[in-house]
Length: 449
Ligand SMILES: O=C(O)C1=C[C@@H](OP(=O)(O)O)[C@@H](O)[C@H](O)C1
Ligand SMILES: C=C(OP(=O)(O)O)C(=O)O
Image (cartoon, rainbow, N blue to C red; front, top):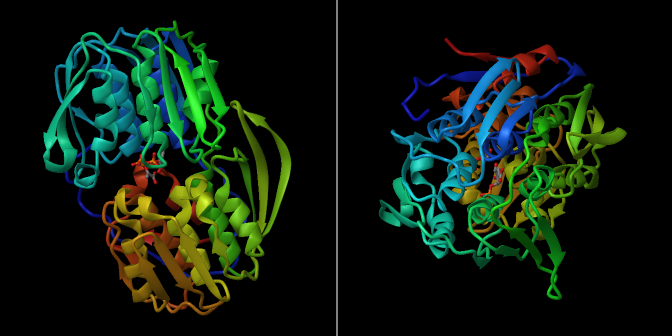
């Protein structure tokens, strides 16, 4: 929710090796989509393993405000009674998406082809993020958006009374933009087409197919990805088993790699090629990770990761890998700080429009901890200090950004001196069990008082 919460200062210190099993919560991207697609299906969708983080809970409340019935049956177990494609009703109050770019952008897409008016807002971070990347293509369907300057929230979207299908090429690599267009296309008659230059996470395509929509993905002669959706399907309710979140798994994996003597198991980590760029990168850096028990869970390829502390070396991360690990660059920059040599991350300017400017947030915090960095608009370079080489001893600003908070706390687990963050509160948006899970592995992380 967007009300200004009291900051929760937190710190992490070095202790012995990490051991045990890190069962991270459900995937955030899939959890949002399970609720939204369930709300647009006819009848009862049952979800297990839903991430009960603030971002997803805000999406659950939004689906209720739009007329679906959403009930929590038990831990991670939810039921959604959907209203069918085109069946949403005008919300009586402002939709507050809290800290969640995914929530607000996907829901904007879902309402854009309904003949009513929706006003969206969010917290201090979300109100700074660009929304024109979504409202521009939604205008092609016939929707009109009026927001603050630069297309910022709060923003009112007047849905199209007579929607027309759209053929759109995304100008930035963004699964949120792609998904917003596909969601709007659900209630437009005919074919909606989205083309992306490089593949982004494909959960919308996979899950909409599972819910019974006709979605075809092709590679164009130029090597682009073209997704075609036939509008006005009847979505069929599903039983969705949400797999664990590979972006959350990245934090215990990173901690185990950089805390000497560690040996942990992280079960059920997605191997979906549109999500697993970090794991490919870590192997290239020399990480000792065994991918055990490959199988399918909740429609996603997964494996259990056995991770042991490793001597890592810096590498150049290819820019065409960025979309498949976009949320993992903050924690990669921490791992890079503990490696020997330099890690160069190019093609990462999308990081500047996340919950914070993540290039700047990581660069300033790493410098404060004694790590040399260089940055350009589209590049972050981290000069590794080697194992045992990071000084730490700083309080890092988290800027309402969960991934920045968790990244610096993981750094504190390996640095010579304690690392603190000014506010660990945002961690609850995506990984509410972070502190408990890391403590359970033997890490020394706690709230300051
Ligand atoms: O579609 C999604 O679920 C997401 C897409 C990504 O954002 P962009 O579409 O802005 O790259 C990612 O950063 C976010 O955490 C989740
Ligand atoms: C960028 C993220 O989320 P969102 O865009 O949904 O706020 C994230 O979780 O790292």
